Length: 166
Image 1 (cartoon, rainbow, N blue to C red):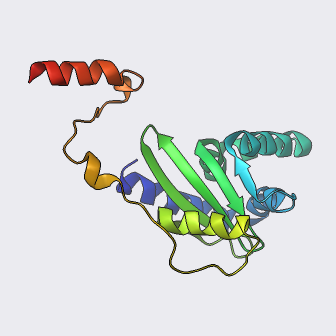
Image 2 (image 1 turned 30 degrees about the horizontal axis):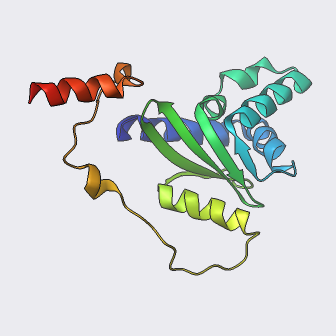
């Protein structure tokens, strides 16, 4: 998802959260009220479906927040924030967070999302600020990469064509 579409989705989501505060609070607090702190895609979809069925409100399904939840691959929650890892299309990720009380929304870098998850896994214990990070990008810069989504799952075929054309 390009930056323009990401900014647009976040802007629409922010408008929805402030216009429909009661519905939005119901959804985000449904996840925050569980004992779980880390949610997989299936947990998010099941929890949202359960919420819509329990309240019998189909109107929740057609909201920007429902769209974010449906495209989220995982989420992490603490007392103040809910973070989402959103994959709107193949190979295109963005990360956002929503404050549970004010419903302020902002896009965050992947490193902040991972740091948040790490703190949750360590029960909020203070951790060393010098975490090990490994950047494998320099090793892949000279390799050809498939750029179309239809190429997924056909990597060997792609490499064979590239190497044989040389």
